[in-house]
Length: 488
Image 1 (tube, rainbow, N blue to C red):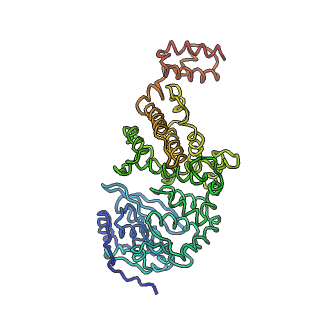
Image 2: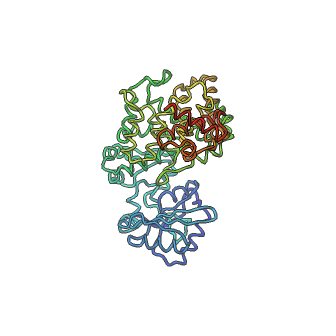
Image 3: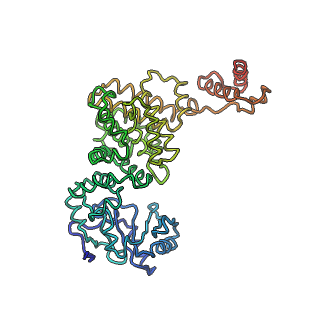
């Protein structure tokens, strides 16, 4: 019989944000049914990690009702995620920002059933919102496993009943620095072969979370060791036998991993998590010196999210990971990557961005000269995707040289990247998108010819002539349009 007696943690107190205390006080006035905090929030509070959102569980049949009452009490919004399984999400606004509460019915008849049905013991700890939130309910020893840095399944059916948890096990073991205990590791390897029974969307979402880790390379190595990569991105596994991408590394797999690692380091030093030590290496230090003036605006770009809040940085990692796939068989990496991303049900926009990155990044910084017209054509073609292309291109170079970086070659590539960034951020109106001096209607009125493809060609020539300083007035633009019409 599971022991559901609340108790104080044995090692360290729970560290809750102040808004949870405010939330509890307000909920006590609502006369709600039993309601518990579960999952990652309790685990992170024990680890003294930031807690931003909460998973709550209530008796089956009550969860959506509870969610509605919480939303009404705080004038928040509610989204019914799964009516049949009694799951809803509440969005609340506080001075500190927005808070998500996911409220779900018990996985079974009781709280004990719910906790046993969870994935790992460290996630099967509960806190009674109607009781003392400094006490935990821990029937499976999750606190002890956290203290020993162990990731352990809750039961013998935890993983095989939901194979996507095998991917989550790898991610959480790396994110929380936990060692996967032997029986859990055995079950992971069994569950991997059942991933095909899970919807691609669920696999994709867990996969994206893995790629969004601060250091995804460790997780990728574990995922490869247990067979997960063969099930999710088998094209990457094939790179282990191919040696033509870098003369400095044993195979394309190691080149790929180093590319992903370098991209992660670059994203870190661009981010506000950067420390003096993390930017001390020559390669990253030079990049910081050249790019720091654009740091705020680059972060704004990198912090964008795709549907269902999939991080943009995870898509960049996917681009780095798939940069060389298919080449060992003579195929286009972009085509192979597009097919894989579609199988994983990435959105159309994500697939398009991924293909663009993989097509454009490898050769980008090999070009010796970037005059204004070349800069304009780059940004006109790629738009904000150009930022992604630049970062992945730099990572591919660093991934190819390993520890044998040639200083002048790296400085040359960083300088080319800075030239492009300067065009985008400092000289946008002169190089990227000069204000038009005429539009299509102006040309039709001045030239009095039927509308046709010549209009688009003329506007493109006029725009490029503006970049070169050859056209500054409407009259000069119309004269150039006449020339284009005569040529065509």
